[in-house]
Length: 235
Image (cartoon, rainbow, N blue to C red):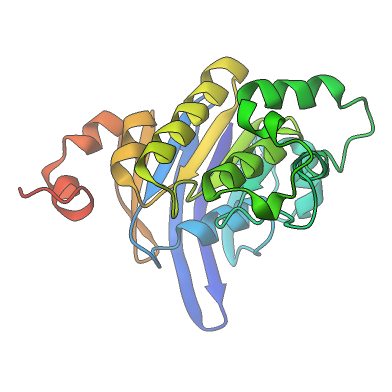
């Protein structure tokens, strides 16, 4: 579905991403893991069209979208759920959800009900201001909002950031459900490498702007170097 080839990203004179290539197959969960500053978020933002690629190409279903405006990419089925949730705090849960459908002009009723079925807690807080929700509820709201564009591929930037372990488990359970039941392709970046690798069909390790290792989630979970570097286990 998504193919990134020799992608380079510069911020002024700094090369943040140094010629990476990877693929995200249809209906799969693919994760990029790595330390802060590895270039993971820059990669997602470039795929979303929020940052311009310096070199390389991004292809979606065989179409070159490297220079396509970000709004048009959303129309093509790519959506980014950003780090830090970024809900609109002074708007209700329902208003936040509806914003995710800003490019649509059809009836939203069925899709709103679908996201409420996925996130019953949000339905209970339908008229509550988003800024009064807990961190976990705000993350659920951010994901629900992203789903309203009916994405083919959902990119999630650090969905577990700052959340309690029990909430992290719930968020990852929902991510798997979105992938399996809705057929949505997931591209996930996550510092919680253990959780990310457990759900991933394919995984890539990024270090200082380069992909240094790849394999299935299970293969990287069993890799001694990964255990030592990201899972806190001795070789």
